[in-house]
Length: 221
Image (tube, rainbow, N blue to C red; front, top):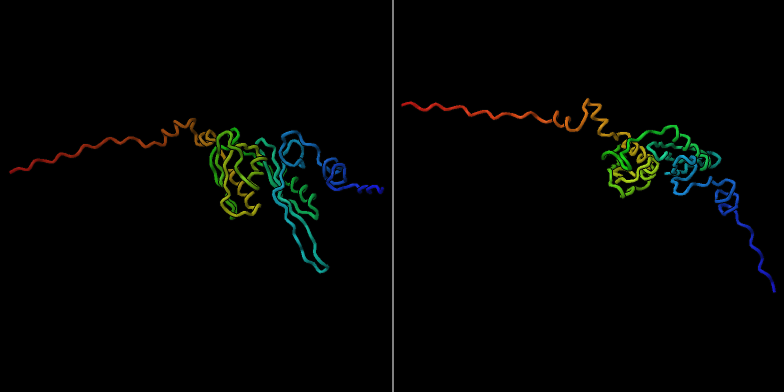
């Protein structure tokens, strides 16, 4: 009776293989339970690869291929940045994008687990509308907008992309909206007011007293 020949070992992304899969020497460090992101930017940061584009350049000897990666990096506590890395290989392009995103991080004004007010961001043909939501709503967004909001730390929000679907323009329009977020107390302080009540009183028009009608003299015969 002939025995079944043993199958050759599998490599690549299989456990224990030489790829980036679990157990491989190039695999990412283990993530804590419930952690967001892909673990390339470090344990204390949240990173998302939004878009990878392959660029082909035709030269005399053939074609040269390169890759560009759009990456979002945030700390989940109100700071987020984006970067676009270019390289001959995808992992190198992602690494460059992460380093660029870390250098361009901005601080975002939040109100609890949502944003203070509704705002619309613009960049080129991209328009992104953000609206605060009640507790338990979740992140109602998709694509690049969701990646940015998760990296910021927003947990309840409503969004709508109204313009182009180009991921670069959508990302920049979303960052334009986040830069324009302000708390009501900050606005009142900048205007020299202490509370919303005094602001309403200052804006309210003064009361106008009614003017009596002039008396018409009686006709004389």
